[in-house]
Image (cartoon, rainbow, N blue to C red; front, side, top):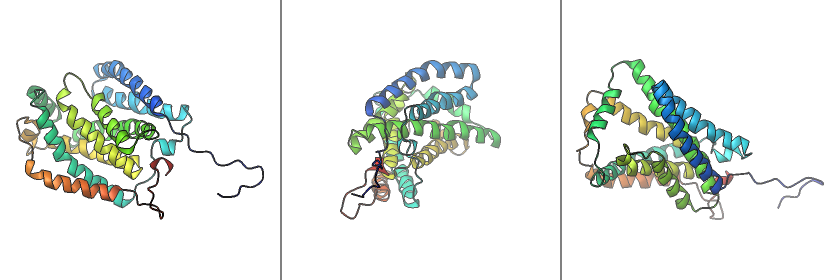
Amino acid sequence: MTDLPPGASPPSEPRLPTPGSVLLLLLGVALLYVVGGVTLQVLFGEIGLALTQLGLLLAPALYFVFRGGYDPFRTLALRAPTGRQVLGGLLLLAGGTPIAWLLAWAQSFVIEVPTEMLEAMAALFRTDDPLRILWLLILVAAIPAVAEEFLFRGVLLSGLRTRMSRWGAVGLTGFLFGLFHLTPYTAFRFLPTAWLGLVLAWAVYESRSIWVGVLLHFLNNGIILMLSVLPATRDMASDADQDPPLLLLPVALLLLWSGARLLRTPALPDGRTPDPSRS
């Protein structure tokens, strides 16, 4: 233990939120999102969707951190990732995507996929205007990547990991992410959405950087958008009857394993693994 100068106080531990406080925050945000989000989108259309993400997800998360006096750097995992961790996150997403497809296919046997809604969404994104494509990337990829990551993989994950094991915090974060996006019209996407939430939480927990989650979230949404925009892939994006890529599953598992290895924080000289909340 380091000797302190006379009269000096020992450094205090960084203040992080508790699981109870972050779950109450998420409940409040969900209620606000349901009531205010619908209103904003009815009144302002696509602009309302952006306002919903920024005003009803990101703003409450930031207010919670600063009003509560929590350490913003550790609560929001603001440290910059290493190149190795970015590569690990990319491999994790590449391996997780075929599994998400498999989960969506399996869930379709229980919950019917609304083909008409998928076709309507594909028609909404169908455009050849570069400015329109750029706006859609901002709207459905960039803004959610920041707003949802700061709320779920920032505030929520940091609160849960103070009292829960790694997989307890990661698994619950993924489940709540899927539940948050659950509506009568999107129930068919619950399993793949929850799985995506788990993969993103896994990447952020291991890298201790929210920016890995932001990047992966942006890429996931952006790739789905571009598949709906590009003429060569439009039909595939709206086809709910496609079989999952079963032959890719061994490759997917290998990518997941490789990504997890690259993301993992190196052990300390005594063999211990650093606590993510203290880095």
